[in-house]
Length: 625
Image 1 (tube, rainbow, N blue to C red):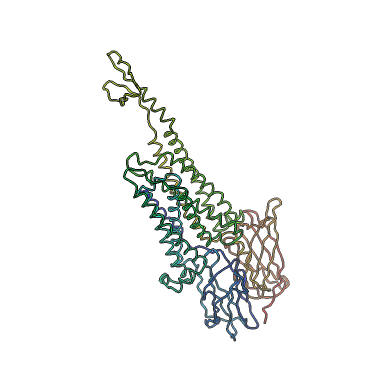
Image 2: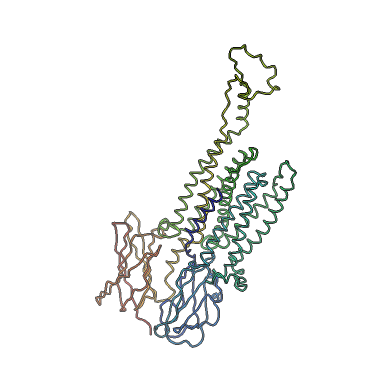
């Protein structure tokens, strides 16, 4: 029943949290720029991203106004820079508006896609149609997300159960629950890894589920960073399968009634090495491999994963052993529970320490905790972790009582109390004193018809029941933490979202970037708002605004309004109608009718009742001919 409850909780959380994930990288510039009008046809199209990207042969497509492809060769990195993608265009191109559709894979393994347009000679209608759905909002994307949850769960079960046997209770490896848990963990991790590898190609190229068995696509996927990590994980799992089989034979080969063989120091070293290697396959292909301080972030991510596995997988192992029904001599020794309690405390300490670093690295500012999807998810995770720590404190109390009950001193006092019992008779002379108290067996309480005995009450069963309840609650909450952690690994970090918004101005000389300081309403707190107009010419423009705090972090404001006025001609104010994009504000259809000096008025509401208006001027140029 416990296993069914845990599986039901995992499935419910998976179905509730398997929404589309945002990617890490973002497009920071393009040549030609989005919306630009060129006098002559370009020789190539170049895209620049906020981090290194990889792509397939069909990642970049340049479509003519008639929806014909005009880039005959696949994309390449421009000048050897890993954060760029470039395609060469065919010779003579007709005038009109061209569409550039792209789909690449960021360094943390998530695909991103988008499209923009540029014109040659003059703008025109175009027949090109580009999908605008999220890269993860597909059947392959949703299935890939669920399999990532399964892989994390398998890692936790495999690492946790093995660690419990190697460190806390060596003879537990001979019990059926632990063997089944190791088998379930290995099968879940292996099956999900194989499925992830097959789906890697369709996931990157927006293919269908049936294309998972395309050998050509599979071969390309294996050569990528994520595919290579999955292949390495399968090799490690094959080695683990051999070791688990050999380990099982050692237990099966023990004589009946004999003590099962205990793992030695070499077994522990090999187990630790394999666990670290498995964790590296995650760190190498996810958020730790991209962004700032990669050299430090990689080992921190490995420690975080291992601590999660030791704590959560060990909790589930202990829970199954505590709920096992069998003879009294098969119960979990109090010493093993005490060792796991100490080990779990250290694992949680490592989780908290590495989690704090990862939060700082990925979030970047306090404001991003409330203004970005990653930050809000992280807040939920922190709240659940605090709840887990509160429940774990009760588990430690029950463990301390159980260990005290099973301590040698306690046992000596109980035996002394039993030897002190004497039978009291009514209406008869006292019984003669016993000659040898040490050799004669003591009569058990209640054997004589006229005996009145005082028996010491044993609380061990009560303590075990209390511990079992607390471990059950802690394990369920641990599953919740695991699911939230998996969601976080598939969500765009807040720091990356800020970089993407700040770098959203395309690499074109016509783009206008305004940085305007303003008073945030508190003492000595001066913020800045960055306004980007692209292409900064007459016609349709994109307006993006990012608010920064005094220390350079992203700031969340309840309302931001931008209007433009041409005072000489009496035009305006034209409201940009910015919309909150979860970290920055943007509008994509502001039309400026005339060139000249325009006044930009920015109204920032910092609280429910406080707002400030600042202004700056910008020169809008005419469309080049």
